[in-house]
Structure formats: C-alpha cells, structure tokens
Amino acid sequence: MKKLNVLVSAVGAVWVSGTAFADYSFNFPTPVTPIARETLHVHNLFMVIILVMFFAVLALMMYSFVAHRRSRGQVAAQFTAPRSRKQWIWVLAPFVGLLLVDYGVFGVPAYHAVLSYEDTRNDADLVVKVTASQWLWIYEYPTEGIRFASRLTTPRAQIDNREAKGEHYLLEVDHPLVLPVGKKVRFITTSNDVIHSWWVPAFGVKRDAVPGFLREFWVRPEKVGTFRGQCSELCGKEHGFMPVVVNVVPEAEFKAWLDARKAAASGAADAT
Image (cartoon, rainbow, N blue to C red; front, side, top):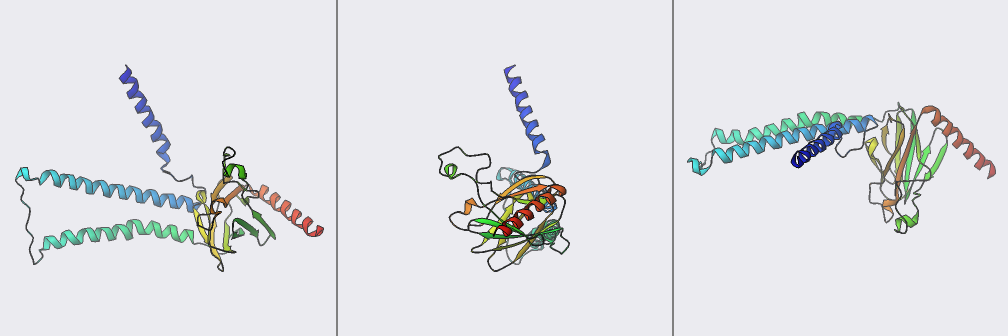
C-alpha cells in the first residue's frame, strides 16, 4: 500500500507539472504583446526542431554502436584516395540538410519576427521618448507635452540587508510609465551618458539607449496590468538599480492620467 501511495503521488506530481507546462512558456513570462508572442513561438519552434534532431542523431549513433560492434564481426572500412561517391554523399548530405533547416525552417519564422520587431512606421497611436541617465529613466510624451523621471524606490535599508526584502525588490519606482491597452506605442530611445538598455520581458522588447543616437521599437500591450523589467546593459555601479515599471490601463483611465499630468505640469509652470 505504501508503494502504491508513492506511485500515485509521483503520477500526480507528473500530471500537475505537465498541466502547468501545457502552455509551453518554459521560463518566458506570459507574452502580452504581438512581439512577445512571436518571440515565444519562434523559441518553441526551434526547441522542438532541435530536440527532434538531437534524438534522431542519438538514435542513429546508438544503432551504429550496437549493429557495428566488433563482437558481431564488423571490420572498420579503410578509406583511401581518391574519394568515393559514397564519401562525398556522407559529407555533403548533412551540410545541405543543415542549410535547408537553418535558412528554411529556422530562417523564415525568425525573419518574420525580426521584421515585426522593426516595424516602426508612423502608424502609432502614441509616441514615447525614453532617455536613460545614470541611473534613472526619463519618459516624455512629445505630443502631450508631458515629461517626468522614474527612479527606484526600494529603501536603502533593504539594499543594505538591514530590512527584509519587499515583494518587488529593486523593481519598484516612484513614477511608472503608463500606456493604454490595445494601442500601438512607438518608443524612441537615447541616453545622456553611457549605453543603457530598456527591457520589459513580458513585452518581448529590449532596445539599447545609445548616447547621440535615436533608436526605435514599438509595443502594443494586449493586457491590463503592471509589467516590470530593468536596464540590461552594464551601465555603471548602480546598474542594478534602474528598474522599468509599466502600468497598462484602459484608454479612459489613460486619458484621465494624461489630464492629471498636464494639470500638474501647468500648475508647476504657473507657480514658477
């Protein structure tokens, strides 16, 4: 009975893990943009093909080991020049096969994903400029006339191990970026000092912010929520303290946020 319980528990564990694995997301976050979904699709496709190739080659090797062992009277072939037709076939066939797989099976979906990622045509519903500095992000909505900085808010006591780490340790800011759900947002990145990199895994985008250059990418968030990332370029001693937090909200809530920001900016200008 004890062995039966152990067996049932093991089967249950496998079943649960298989159910959780059914979305084939591996270690990727749940994609919330078309680019992230395309990236996950390409990754999964490549993994399946690579695994099939691996087990096919492994099976062929194991068969060769067993079928051509010395105990069965197999004698190693002696190859001498000139090369035979069979030798050329064994050399060229894998080479041609790899070319077809790389440029056909792998190349087409990867090319489509890259084209999708670089589609920064002027059909965006919103433009956001991201300027990186050591060590914070400056967000600007050029058309709306809004500009603000986004800084880390994790207490220094947590960083110095004098307090317990919070739920969003090193991934919390004072002013998150706010985007409307379902709208195409065109991003323009640059930097004030060194190379930084704006990265949100759930969006499937990562773009370097390079001093003196304007670089582009786009996202279309399809889900309301808070999504977190960070600078993924070694940009100095505070590199680990440049989080990215994006709040994706309904369009009505986004418009209300814009109005509140504009009113606050106007009030600050009047006070000055």
